[in-house]
Image (spheres, rainbow, N blue to C red):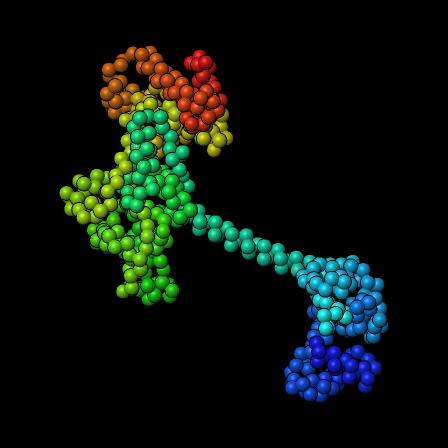
Length: 499
């Protein structure tokens, strides 16, 4: 700007005007050449003064225009040179130039209203020898609507980035805690207590149990208890194609095989670094991969497929299986050394048939949840239907219970009660299955339905009383602790005359 100021002084004395046209480029070059500047800079300065996309205005310390580019003159409907000496506030009442002069502080990227249109501009004070002698301003001629459109696109992109980041975060994070595990039976409570104790320990864990008992729920809860902010990477070993298993678990290097990404790809163990990797159905891994898994567990380092470089990683392994690994070892289907490596802490989840006192709680909890999902109003289960469900052996455990309850709700759509007729035929005593499979050994011992009903009600009353005592009489907390809807909880209190 020093050079431009000297040029203005020079041209004012020679031409008496504030203008830079093509014929004056040589003059600018002549002036600037004295200071070692080139013709390219002269053309650049000419562009600055004639920029069709932005205005350029300079005012003195009284806010009177000293220079205005041609585009701005045209915008305000002024003839060439007519703006000279005019107070900028007459043209732009909300101009920021006087503010910059008064404060000495630049205003960058502010929205100004010019001739009834919104424009984005910036103003800067001009300071010489610590004294403000004026200010200059630039204004985008593009409409504010165009800028808003750009901002809208940027905002949209930011939302998309946030969505994918959140998706990635959710994909590698745990969703459940121990509070999500339902049950009042001694068996399930002891299992939860043991899982809580080993969760913070630096040891690998194996969760065993029949299909549908909630092995994944326990895996999520163990991670959430001690590593909530860390990655939780789930791998279903049974669904990984054999030929891709190694690269999926341990990653691959650049050019490891035909079709590989040029940059290579990290495996699940790398993604779980400093967090937890959950190998569901670990018994499905082929023996060849079990050997490499054993090395990773022992050394805590991985080697990508096609690479000779090893990388140290830190992780907690949680494995799950519904098969007896010890029997698989004897059959030669699971490595003995790997079995002893992963089975330092074993959590055995009891099947539902061994904790029948949990069934009423599950029926109440999932019936309420299914009603909200299906938008139905099936509130209760008849005594006969409830007895059948409690006696049933549940080979598919809680997963089967939820599926069966959903079917029953759909069949009882127009009513408010699940009846015996809404249950699958094979569950009934005269159905396709033997009474032993349906009802278990205790049914044959208790032929009187009234006796069994009384025992179930006594047990339910005892559970509710225990919950109320544990919460110091706070019924709301007691209902929440039992994962029971408050309306159902109060109905039970009324039914059993609990005071």
